[in-house]
Image (cartoon, rainbow over all chains, first blue to last red; front, side, top):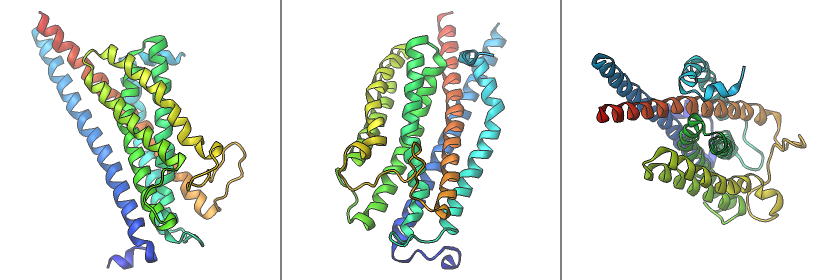
Length: 56
Length: 243
């Protein structure tokens, strides 16, 4: 099944697949962590600002 | 219209909210197109076989690892000269992106080097300066985390960024003035335009490079927004604690 999808990489299949695997994991991980941190920061600021406004 | 108006955090957040959707879409489209095209639809190289497909990850990530540091250098200089907080936060936000790009370049370089050079690593000028650049990234991030006062942290990390720029320059130009080592020279010399890469490899490579550049921009915009919000939250909490 996999060999039908993947191009024939010959004897260098391991380094090529490992490069794409590790590279994509790092890129996707970076985007996911950035978005998660961004959402957390936004929620924290919204909570503090709404508390600030209700106190005023 | 002055560029400096975006040194205002509120205006910067409004700008990033406007440009980010387009940047995300374009960057993901270009990265996906470059990588899919490179992996599935390019032939093997007559000498390097299928390992040539690693170029679509290795070159764009190495390019952005160095350019990220130059962007941090520019932002640090703006902080040191004009004291705009957004520029210091943009430099801070770019560092994790730069470090990930450096790791991708180092890992894919090792995986490419093993079958082609017969070794995972060599103390070659370009590889060594790249490893030192990686250590500078770690040091830069550690320094930000270690200093509580944000202005002092921005000052000290800006100085570290200036020092580390030597290695960013070395990473790019080491092969030009150190005529030794395993790493080949640049395949796409911008100054002369005499590239040694055939069109069949060059087109997807350029698309991937544009994609990585746009992804870097999107991540820096987004992460700078996160840093601005974190600082604002901290300031509001500190004000609340005083009253």
